[in-house]
Image 1 (cartoon, helix red, strand yellow):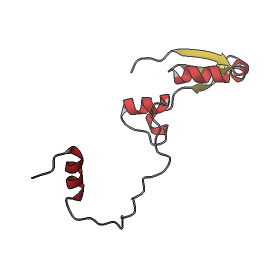
Image 2 (cartoon, rainbow, N blue to C red; image 1 turned 45 degrees about the vertical axis):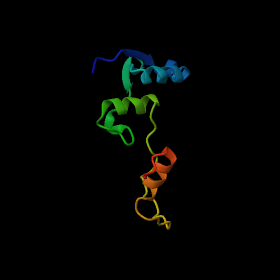
Image 3 (cartoon, rainbow, N blue to C red; image 1 turned 180 degrees about the vertical axis):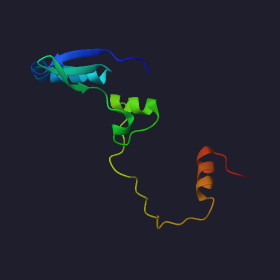
Image 4 (tube, helix red, strand yellow; image 1 turned 90 degrees about the vertical axis):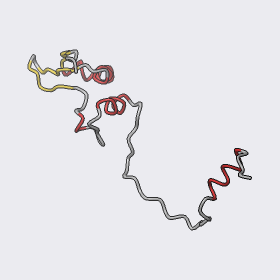
Length: 104
């Protein structure tokens, strides 16, 4: 991964233009926050481990950060077992009928 662009901003300017700086951070810019010319904080994209449900896959992590993909908010739950029982092969027979592939 390449070196990110780096910007420095004072606390007052950051407070007044926070949304603009957050957009820049989302675009990959690292922002150093200063108080009286002393760096007191750094804003940057979260590391893989700090993204909820983060992935070791860098492409998936980037999609999550950019909003292309949203991760599930809760764990997957098993579906209830259907009370409906049909003879084996029913779905294949119905598909064949729909496709006009009915065996002769």
